[in-house]
Image: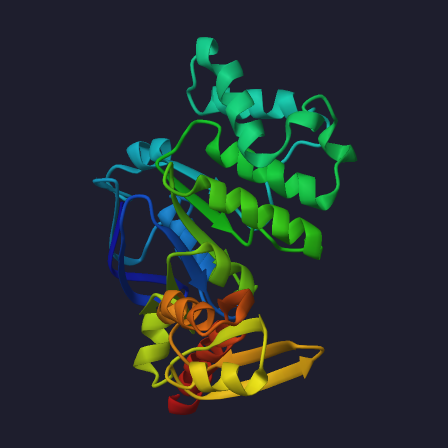
Length: 309
């Protein structure tokens, strides 16, 4: 879906991005990570045909963003960091307007608007003025306008920016629901959301791509194994004994027969860990990828780049 080779963008003498190279396959959900000012938005604007690159090549769904920008724009849905909303319109009016701008036929417009509202949870506010909506719903409208024409590629720049915890969870569900039907590139600095919604990661720092791969692949490259968090009901000593075959074990808390533990092991081993716990006669209450792995990877990568600089 996306092929990027040697992508560079200068503003005057300042290189916002330099020699970026990556590929994204059809149907993937990719997380694009970086500190503020790292070059995320510049990259997305080039992919979205908002900015022209200084050098390099970008091909989206077989079409070059420089020589065939019109074809590229027809295939993408773009949510910038500030959603392009018209407050005086209702949600339905606005999405109808965007669908018409995107070339959706009059016959198909109503169904496309309905599908976009369904995917983003906007059915109940179809007739509401955009000016009356909460920030969370405005973000949803921004996502809806990006997908109302059924694009092959969705580019979402900070879709969870400014949302409260409940709205973040809801937006996470929205993005997960887009997987498969669209290729999705999500830029964010909220690392847990990227960890829970994306297949692979691209990490950019000071305009350069410093790492790419799955969270587990990046952890392995950096010499880490990741963690698995569990909560079981049963004997603490027995739980530790069973889990030690997978890696070092820490008991986070134990009371009233409930034991919370962290195992330093690859999240890919979660099925084996679950099987071992249940096979040992322990009651498995919770098992998940350990929190903080992505934060650790991200901080080590960006700090390491700063140190080398």
